[in-house]
Image 1 (cartoon, rainbow, N blue to C red):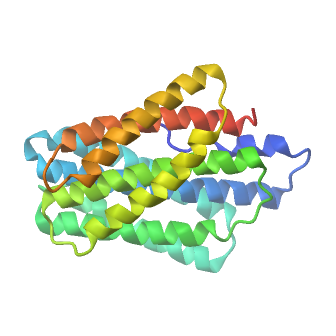
Image 2: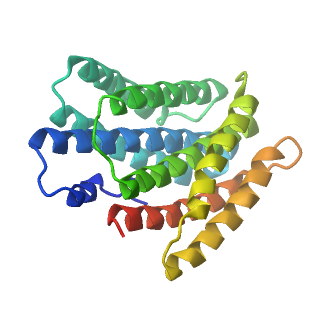
Length: 252
């Protein structure tokens, strides 16, 4: 799935847009994509660690996401002149190469921990980059961004689930998972109240059915472990949420 539906659609809400503003939009788009992709990379890498006999497919997904990550790093580099951001991008490029190296070997507990650290570091860096962007967003723009944030949070939850399932030694992951569920619920409540057109309202029922199931799995991981179901159901949620985001990006 192409994760971040182009924020360039947002420019249709403005009769004129400066080159500087257009660059900011591209930077915001790319930074949001990086946040999602780092969770996706870690989730699939951990899945390949949990199920070594199925790691070919999972690691191929990691490689694909790394290619998308590289594209987004280049996009930011081409659209910023800020030295602080360029410094973050240099770090991104280094960490990305480290992950490529790890993919050449069989996943271990140590490498799984390294990928998790990579995810946390790049997420923090992407958030720093996103805060450098200022833009006067409309209500529909904000709904668009909220949908994309939910997609990121859903992927983050799936990643935390894989951490706990893989039994790698990470303190406070249970607590982070609980906090992320609360954040996701807040955004989902706003989606619940939004009046989508008829064809998307049906999809809204589906996405909440999937969310309720996923939330149950996240909350009961200590007694019920279903990583393969988590992979499939979160992918289903992502596909529907992306349709919502397209609706908001069009300003409908």
